[in-house]
Length: 88
Image 1 (tube, rainbow, N blue to C red):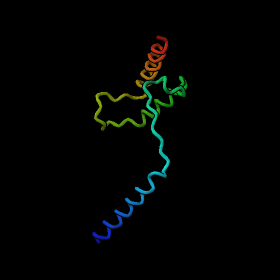
Image 2: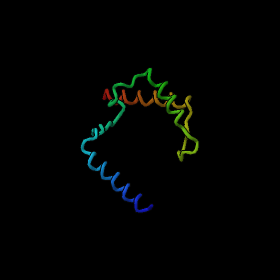
Image 3: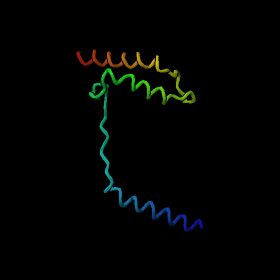
Image 4: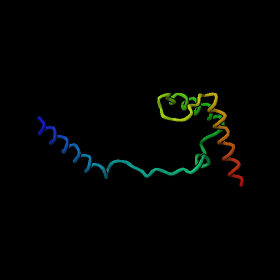
């Protein structure tokens, strides 16, 4: 059984190796700051806070775990700082 499993795995890997050039892939765009994302607007912040709050897990090894009430002012502060830097 072990021999058949190895053969199957090698065939499976070979199929993907040959299919790789035909699979759709694009190089990710590197975003250096918030201004690189023009789609983010002030009215999107509550939705972002909701998603970030749902993602938060107390088991993650982070120094501070923020709740929704703490995240919204933090996002607003980041947006303000980015607007100040854009003017300079």
